[in-house]
Image 1 (cartoon, rainbow, N blue to C red):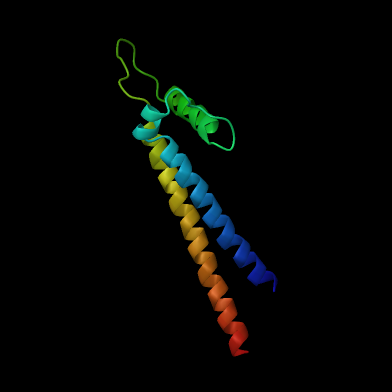
Image 2 (cartoon, rainbow, N blue to C red; image 1 turned 45 degrees about the vertical axis):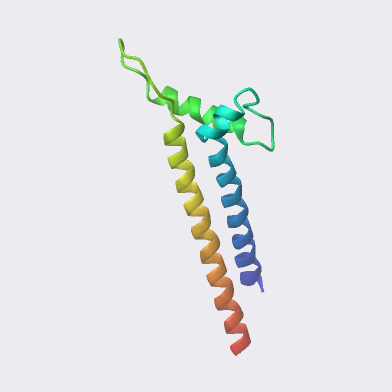
Length: 110
């Protein structure tokens, strides 16, 4: 029973994390930044504040050499990282679902 509960919690948590991260990815697309530029960043539950903080951190980690000018921010890199986290969340959710199905089949056969 504990394994079944753990698998169900992993499945639901993976789906919730993937959903929120997909929304965060959407919040840093060009369409949203242009259309909602005057409203960005919004307060919680919108992910804008921590996305802005993360983008500033990535920007500070890759400084511009002296005499050069940075033409873009780090939103593309941020979208890549978010895509990786979304993929990981979905893998956890799918693995938990498979585990749940195996446990259910094992219980039914016993």
